[in-house]
Image (tube, rainbow, N blue to C red):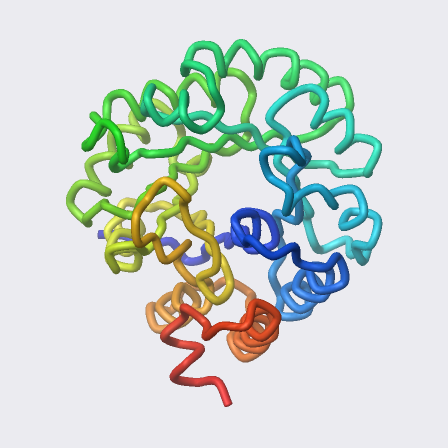
Length: 298
């Protein structure tokens, strides 16, 4: 067993966390969240998604959000860009890192982005090429790595194949998403181990939802293998519209509390993070999903 000395946190609350909210969140509130995260020491923040406003109305303000970002040489801002149109908008907005996404489940891909896994890679090819031409880094997301609402369990070999294809296409990092939060520690380790046989462990990120309360246990199991990149969402906001009872991404506060207790460096101030989570929770008019925030917040 060998835990990493430091872990990179990719904060996804401004995009993945807020995208399913029914009430449109004001640009000012999104920018306040992003700035709170920056001041708490978060260095990687997914701030927006350049997607169809018809399908994701909450992200229709992506350009305005990007225009209002506080420039900080220590902070990397990224955005979701599923196609060339999205990438073009991100380029105009000055974003230097983007993300594409597919799934390890054919059924989920069809429901989520209306195409097969193979077709999703066909869509990525011109995005990757243009991103390279503009010196933009590309991150890849893989959904349903530990379970699918339509197909049930997903074979880890399939996840590894998809991850390898994303890496081979030029994604500098591949985020493995337990989209519906059904994974458990042994299965999470098996999946990650198989992916690490195909893709360098340093390129693999963990994006675990906490629907069944297993996210922290799954993360620890994967940290034991040397994983050192974790996606999380302050106050545990977000979730999957296809998962009944989904409670959202694993909360960043819970992750940082656990990593602090393990002696693993993140560079993030937990108190500042709790304040960020409390403020966005007030905007959303609900209690934080973070147990650590509820226990330590004042």
